[in-house]
Length: 246
Image (cartoon, rainbow, N blue to C red; front, side, top):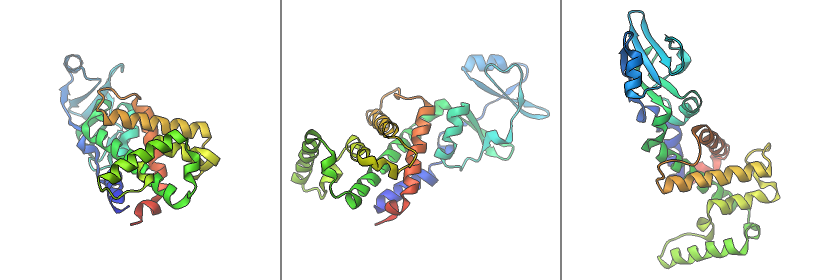
């Protein structure tokens, strides 16, 4: 699991918001509304003698930028993701020295897509390790069809001299089925219901498939994806000893 730990550490701590942020354009008070319309901007930052002001589409007048809207360029991307998803944009800078902006449209950039796919891949690896170490009778939780599919993939991979076991040939949906049985999902969060767990795993699988096939439009909005990220990160943080094992 060493490689999994390294990937999780990178995604958790070293994929920064600056990787998706755009350089801030400063507008003048006399023409900022026209500039917003011409550039299809939903937020404008205006240079004034008293400092920077911001206005969002629908606001009646510019206002000062609050400190809680400003994030360091080195903050991990997934730490600030929920703020961008819920507030539509954040400003990037050190203290009041704002230099960049990150918006919801930036969440569709390659670093985010790679990060999401990486998080889901780490989740799969961790759950597989839980099955391997804690559930010796896991095969009883899958249908014959799903077991046959895993065995077929296992035979194909071993014929190519790949050093794997049958658990590594399970799909995310298979793993969800295994932990859906006997309330094993409570291991991840005692407050989960079976339906809630099944829905989360199913949606994460749909997101993973969309990312894998480079779909132009993901099947969930950013708030829904933000909740998925929170669910995945909670599991991975709680299972840190498994991730850290070698």
